Image (cartoon, rainbow, N blue to C red; front, side, top):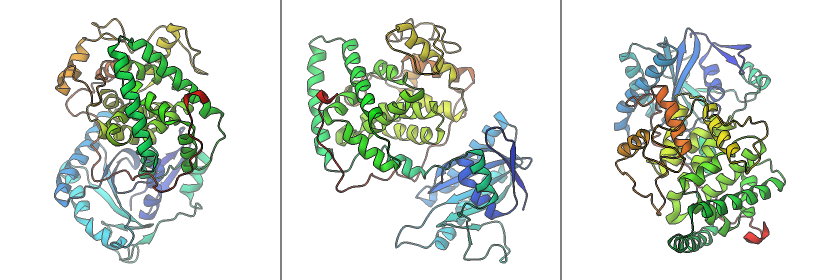
Length: 484
């Protein structure tokens, strides 16, 4: 097998040479930053070194496999050519575990064999060979390319998970942390499925019935924005004061207890306004960002029943904050969830495209810092360098204020969506033409990102985020706004 070297850590000071299929299988979670499940992964090789990679959920229908294979091959090779040059070869991984009581791991390997062949054919048709194709299932791996029974037996080989390999040791030394599976990441933001759903739905109904008459009575948008952001700050302080929990599930349960139903409802509805959402996006650095991320997760879980589509706003904010904090794994998954909820949500679409293109987010952050510092009403995040200059991110020529639209970029987005000025479900205003969205779009335009289908990740197919645990939850005393 061809040796492959991969730098460990951000500096690339340490290098790992992978010589066997087993070492490739063990390295995959470290390459992605998480353990893929129900996924097809293609990794490009440039002169023996790992390059670009693309992942997609395994489609349920075998009839979709040929087209999915062609799309993934074109996406990976095209992006590699645009960034690092044409790859020399590709390694393919098919990852799927057996469901309890269903087919065995070996049967899964055989069932996915045609998909592996489609991937090899699709890459080969673009003159980039697949040098190895592996199936990973239930802690074992099989090679679709190696015919030798002595190294690739029919029952497969065990993937090393004891943490004593060179790969695991080097990753630990370099500080590389492997996240949970993508489904576990998504489960933290999936709508609740407990007895709290009915109470939260009633709270959302009551908040909507309270907000709409106020708007018709002449209450200004700025007043509602100020109320929403003030409430969000009070909840974030409450979350910050709470003791930390090591387990993610316990931490989420505690955060759910700290956010009252009426508070969650008011925040969810308030964030449907694009300018309010952009003000909230300014909480993107330091300890403030960590508390904001916890709040956006909690609000996404509270978008239940008929209010599911309202989750696009808190999910997009969670994706933006996760990316700003350097957690690209959670950012990618959350943005995909936001686009599943509302495929036309422009802020999520621009963030997703920026992540796919490897865009530097610092110009956008500099723009938001400048806007926040210009108001002079809030302290800036710790370590931030506020400036009036928005840097490389500027409003379009025909816009003079974050709340006024009509520039060329806005018209392009509206025409692309086919719904100029149309409201979102639930009566919210179209969130496309905000300052953050304009900044992202301007940066993407300078990178040539708006060429047709250029640089975007293929949509995830064949996978569904699991529901959060059902049954009894540890619920404390219902809180009210008076609790602070």
